[in-house]
Image 1 (tube, rainbow, N blue to C red):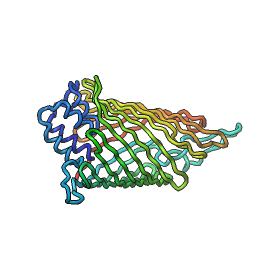
Image 2 (tube, rainbow, N blue to C red):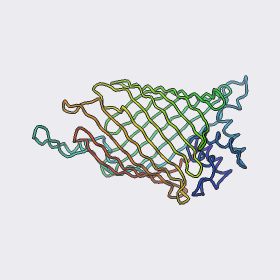
Image 3 (spheres, helix red, strand yellow):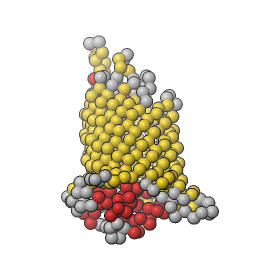
Length: 345
């Protein structure tokens, strides 16, 4: 939400950046990257007309206008809501097959345990507040609730999350981000998780683009196991191309638990036919668990596309293919979702 507000301020100053099919300047590509840090870094390299308001807004949100000796100072607070419309291939986290064959014998899977496919309708409530606690140090509090319901199957999906983060602007174009949070997902089965993360981000320029590199480690805590993950991400604002995103992450293997051990992704965001569009490709490797005494490994590949249909909403399309050593979990699916803007109170 913070990123959206700041990017919107720059868009107001330079509306042609989103309307042009060709992004002629790096700062225009940075503006559609989703990173306000990269956007302001790129703007300050080019200093386009009308950017002063955006830079001032960023300085305030980054805690650089903190008044010494006056304690914590409120930067912003918000409550927002948005409708959710989504097609889900597995609403109830069920088994994606009608039967399973073991040792030459076929076993029929109970109807209630099979994956249920259909549309979900619902809404999301988001709230947050930011305070500068020292110059260049911003403490953020956030939370969200989401509820979706399938009328076809009389099933629902519930999500709740809260986090507390500290963003520290440690030097000119370097930040350290630390977070504590908790999330609960109830989708047929219930997942409860607390987590702590520590990240570092830096802006820099090359001969062909302006970049943001991020390093992050996260420790998750669950009732049945704890898991450490670490990753790197790079966003590049390339003139006449758009915002290119690359990421790679490794996860700790948990014996007896089927979890993600590695994943990587590439994406490109740019206007197409005057509509902001993102296309992405990702791959996820999962292992650690067993299926009827045999080690199970999954390779999940996802191709995604999201684009603005109108000024009021966007559409997302995803194709996912799963190749598993357990034939039962071999699957391919296509899903669609509508993305609406948040309505701020």
